[in-house]
Image (cartoon, rainbow, N blue to C red; front, side):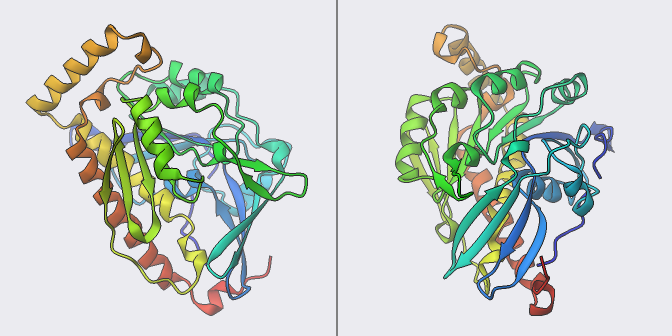
Length: 347
């Protein structure tokens, strides 16, 4: 499978101008990795991977978005993805490596080089980046981002930024045999209240829809979306489920599905931010009412996000539909990219 061109480990560029307005500035705090993909047909490829990589690649296709990544990485990652907009310098340890094996359409994973997966300490450069961001997406691949680290991230983030969590890593544990197993999201009560949107797959944990419903009811200001492959996605607002259908896309090899969920998350974040910042008397009154409730409720203490409080369920449903369409287009494009000749690369 060939991938798009990725951008260099370099400081994030200054915001571009679109007309009289600055571009949307996005910061992704997470992990990057090297994906070694073994397809249904035994083809092997090594490509840059992780939600952060797929999302920033998607953002770079959009002229109005300026994106940067805060993540641990080594020189081996720079060698295969020299254009990724990573803040900071390479670490001595090698980059996380994920081996994805596809058997009858199901993915089995191994993870190596976990010693380099600790959360990146926040520097003056990263805190400045966070302070200037319109959207902050936290996307760990392993459970190495503590609740305290999340608190540090948002202490540096502006009050009006949209905060999105892609919690895949919190559901994972790497064993001594390098195999990945599902675990409970143990620190969810500490982490979730910091976020406006949480997006995860129904493959990430057992009873994903039930968990999302429970968490959405417990943290009413946090909207949760569960992606469900060909079944689309379900949005949860205040514990109430809102299913959104998607048009199935046929794929010849399961490898092409890698990254579709991350593309979904990227477009969901952009569409939600656009809705939250679009002028509307109804949205403004909703935001004021939400802010009033927050100022009198101890339960909302971790939250400082202002603009997303105005998002309605209707806004979010439209955003989910938009994200479903974007993920479908991604799958169709990747299907065209993958030919037998392109896929058969040696590791």
